[in-house]
Image (cartoon, rainbow, N blue to C red; front, side, top):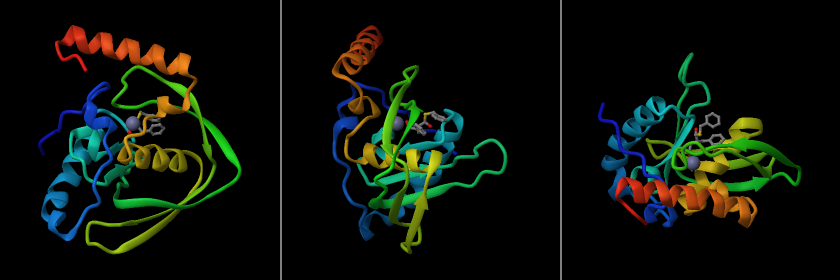
Length: 173
Ligand code: K2U
Ligand code: ZN
């Protein structure tokens, strides 16, 4: 299985809004999803959104138990259709911001509607880590990163470090 390069900030594709998947994208998404899962497991991570591998389509993959019995969720055109008023704080990281972690407050529970790879409409009600991960991945489809929920001071500190690393790699923003 080919692994895909994971984009890192400040790549502008991480800030773009991904396009809804249509029937015309079916074959491409059927090939992409397993490659995204393989890339996520190798990273390692528990979630990955298509814009993170440079594909601006509304697709994300999640597996909260990558090590023991893999139980992947492939989400096509996911949308949050309900969220609790109760909120929860959880430390987040991001494969596109390697080495940076911070506490992020989000709704504690969400209901997400999506299509699976067959096109069947599915719905998940999630709490705890799955709720965080679903919100984190769906944010990626709208060009939103977890640092956007931090103070400007913290966000800019992280962005300065990421921009410096990009310059040293020879690919400035
Ligand atoms: O989208 C990504 O960058 C993948 C994240 C998803 C994630 C972020 C925050 C909280 C839960 C999931 C990566 O999996 S970051 C690595 C990681 C692994 C386990 C728990 C938290 C973060
Ligand atoms: Zn992320």
